[in-house]
Structures are given as C-alpha cells and as structure tokens.
Amino acid sequence: MKNVIIDNLKRISRLKEYSDQDIVYFLVESYKLLEQENKLDDFNILKFYRNWSCHSRLDKDAHKIFEEIYIILRADEYLNLKRNDPIAFSYLIDNTVNKIFEKYSFKMLKKDIEIFSKFFLEREILKFQFFQRPLQNVIKDIPLIVTKNHIGKGEEIFRLEVREQVAGNC
Figure 1 (cartoon, rainbow, N blue to C red):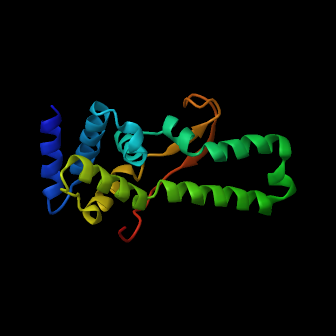
Figure 2 (figure 1 turned 180 degrees about the vertical axis):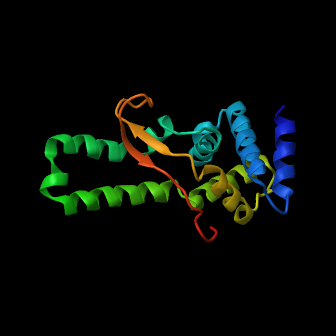
C-alpha cells in the first residue's frame, strides 16, 4: 500500500496544473502515508491543511492553533483589559494572531511539502505555485472555530473565515 500511495503522490506532483480534487487527494494520501510511517507529528502544518480541506469546520484543530487567543479571551473575563485598555488588548490579540498566521502560513506549508517530498517522493517535488490557488479554493469557506468547551459543542467565542483568495504565490 505504501508504494501505491507514493506512486500516486508522484503522479500528482508531475502534473502541470492542479485541480481542487488533486489538492485534496494529495493531502489525504500524504496523511495516510505519514500515518503509516508514524510521522504525523513531524508534519503538523501538512496535517493541519489536510484536516482543514477535509472537514466542513475545524474546531479541535482551531483550538490547538488559537489556544493563545483563547487563553487571552478567557483571562480577559477577569482582567477586563478589553474594557480598561482597549488599545493594549487589541495589540495583544493582533500580535498573537500574526504569530499564529506566520506559523500556519502557506510559506510554512510549502516547507512542509518540500521536506515531505524529499523524504518520501525521491525529490519529486510538488509545484507549490500551482498548488496554492486550488487549496485556497478548497478551504476558503471552511471556518476555524473556537468554542468554550474545546470540542465544538459550546458557545462559539472565536471564528475565522477565509472568504477571498489571497493574491500572489509563496
């Protein structure tokens, strides 16, 4: 099964253009291979984007990613920084969000895919500049949601929706 997955991933990597379906297939098959090889924890960004592309909403993964924001929001229930010093509160949230977006950016996904490709696909590297746009199409309407109880059934306290495609390539 490993060889079949690798052959399929190589075939996709060789394409001149990628469809939305090619992107999802690449992410799903990559995940399967990483799972088989017990390497999922070595490719957290790839794993995150696979989850994002395969679900109608992300709440568990969103909690892991936005945990710092969740902590700030929960702490503010007691500190009232938002009310007492809204500029400092806004700066704290903006700075935290920027750090998160940097860590989970397409640039970091590109790095993960390059490392994955070198390790598993014998240097058959996916052309990320053609991968990015279809991936944006796939994830653009899937919200990242943080709820109070961490499992998606509680009160929603934070939601991120990507509705427009980002211009440019990595």
